Length: 320
Image (cartoon, rainbow, N blue to C red; front, side, top):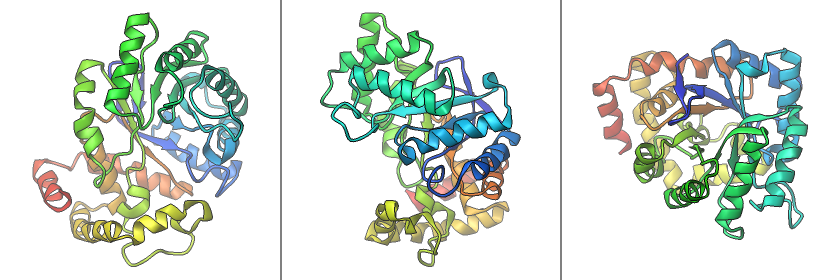
């Protein structure tokens, strides 16, 4: 496993990491969660991602229980959560000081931890002054409830605004962003954020590197039963796959598959390795419903080493 600094921060994250979205609390329980996390941990993964919104908080509960059961040393792990979607009450969502403080406390209780290493503002909140959000997130770090704070799916302009306020007010600055990034979703990470990597040392923990499974090739011949796209709460994935744009992407996946075959890897491994090639990526977050999938995903590190300039140009010719 390779370890990368989180932008300009000193903390180092495994290049491939493990996230609990979709699976924890919805597709399996603590034993299955532990099996997947152990497979990742044994492969060198140290970063495990979560959020208060995942399975209504059950995901954090499962991850906390799994870590306790594994008996891992807390300092060996980098654990995150994200605050925004905490419930239906008027103060149970958003980035007000109240919800940031209450939401963080609740997340730590569910995780059975004194602190998380990374905490994210899960979305921008147009209803809360940026100064209030920045002050509250900085305060969470000062309390020792988190080591670093950052954002998820914020625009470059919003991130720069928050960073400027933190600089002016001598507060803890946003260190990282968690954006979507994969072969078919590139503009924000590769272009919009480009000045931020240089100017403020922004790190990234990217999600959906497999485009909700499209880049695994499993939807090439339709939507198989038991896949994520068949889950009731993820109807949007099925709709995206069946759309004209989704079908165009699947056509490109079919063209990419021979390259994966030549490299002796799966389509999923090729897609994960491709994400790792971009300098602005600190870690690529993976997910899985069983330990065997985790082990397969981790093998992408070997594929990453094979992606020379010639291979990358062939890929670019297909996906551009």
